[in-house]
Length: 205
Image 1: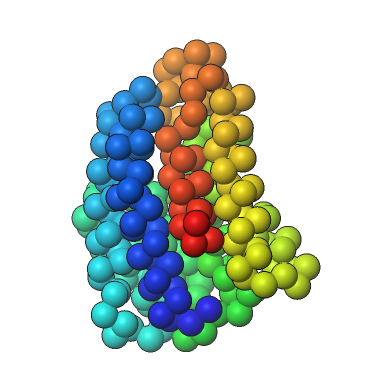
Image 2: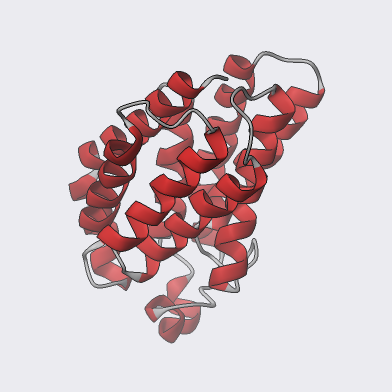
């Protein structure tokens, strides 16, 4: 993956968040404060626009800049978490101008770690990670099996969406949803929806 392909991926993520703005607002209105669609749409757009001129050739610096811009634009809980993922990936890939399959896996693993470390969450807590983690694991397995990135991203998107759907079997541990206790189990997690949409965009769906 080269710099232009990465910028195009950020653009697709930005567009899918904008397209699903109302859907995310509706999901978030049940357990949050209804601003998720706005923060994800505005945040990922800011991240993309900050690097869309292609001036930054260092992929690590590009990702870090995108994350820093997003964090400044949407300093909400979720905005800050998504920014942390981009910035962590940027630190891991600093100095690279081209990404191998293994580097792409490292990008997504670092993104997950950045979000998990800041949010103090883990898979099973009914958060973004429950949509993202299955996708990252599928991506890694496909790349290690020698599949093309295109094939790997497709599997990752499928696994991510399944992970999001599975959040209806989990009790929320964090945030406002956690105050509902057992009653939170049947609800779909808005954060995991963001993860599933991200992976769909990455796969070009």
